Length: 229
Ligand SMILES: [Zn+2]
Image (cartoon, rainbow, N blue to C red; front, side, top):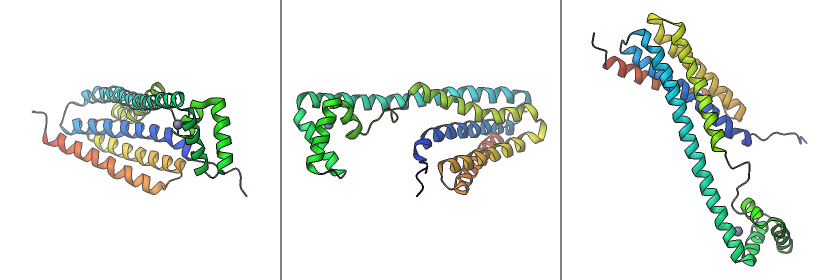
């Protein structure tokens, strides 16, 4: 028997956040740059367009992630406070409730009551938070950390099309950005699928299609709204 098997679910949370951030950074910055380039804006403006996209996107990701994780934590804190009230008002019923949870998980009635009594004597709110509400310290996100991670991973993704603008000029610019972006999206999708234990091909094809679509729409819009000559 292999007792050294690894569980992947605990890693998926932050990998998902980092990959999503980088994906977003690549797709939105590349799409913006190729869209503007397709509208015949002078090439020297494209770098500042990309830079603005990086900064704005990173700020927006950070703000969104901060709000999302904070409101989740607020909800959990409110639930814990409510649970504490129930424990203060009705210890016996809460003990019974906890015992029922352990009984449902497979303990005999007597043992479940004993476990509930002992756990509540040691840390009443802790045992209810963990076993009734399902909230653990690991499951509680840190909003600052989440915001920072999102902003950094978005910036890392956005850097790729931005650097391409810096090193490519003329008619090669749009194809270069499209190709480097799609290649890195596929690489990112495959790697994250691999780490998460999911199908690499599925992950790669999904980002390839969605990324192509985003850039194609942007280029189309850029062509329609040309800069007046
Ligand atoms: Zn309870």
